[in-house]
Amino acid sequence: MIADEYAIFGWGRRVKAYIIVLTGGFFIAGVAAAAVYGWRQDGARASGAAFDPVVSGSIRANTNGSIIAPPAEFSISNTVTKTTCIAERGGTLQSRNRSFSAPRECDDVWPKLSSVRSWSQDEGGSVTLANGSGQPVLTLARKKGLAYEAVKPAGAGVALQMLPE
Image 1 (cartoon, helix red, strand yellow):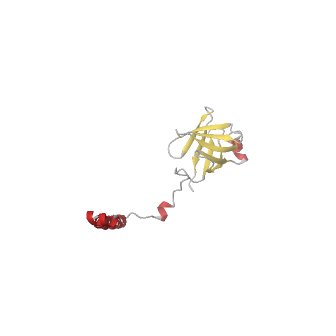
Image 2 (image 1 turned 90 degrees about the vertical axis):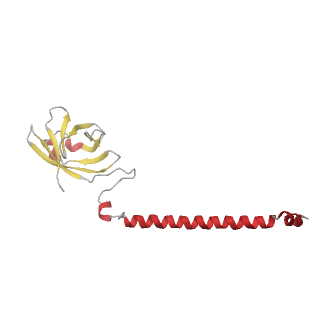
Image 3 (image 1 turned 180 degrees about the horizontal axis):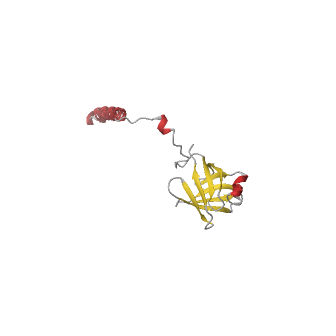
């Protein structure tokens, strides 16, 4: 009886027609997606967009995407005592904190400078050099180029200049 109803109303033919139309639609959508993908790949090649290992590998980024500056050496001088020494700013400890080390002769430039263990830079660009227990030894403001000048304590006469590699 059910077969007779399908025959009367033509449902069998309708179901076959729906399947054919649906299959054809999926086929056309697949071809269109493949064409768009191929077109985008050709566009990237034609525009010259490519990975350059020299440029891309020259600037490192940390896990949150910010740029990491390499370790650097600084000449530290005191205009009052007319003394100098060389210290090193090391790798990143946290997002704006870096390690810092100065030899014993840097204590002649500024007292307890050899006890400094961290370089902490704030959003404004000023730098605090702190000892192992986190107590500030010097606070510096960035000047022209790669130079820093002590602002705390006032009148310290201490300046840092980044040395070329």
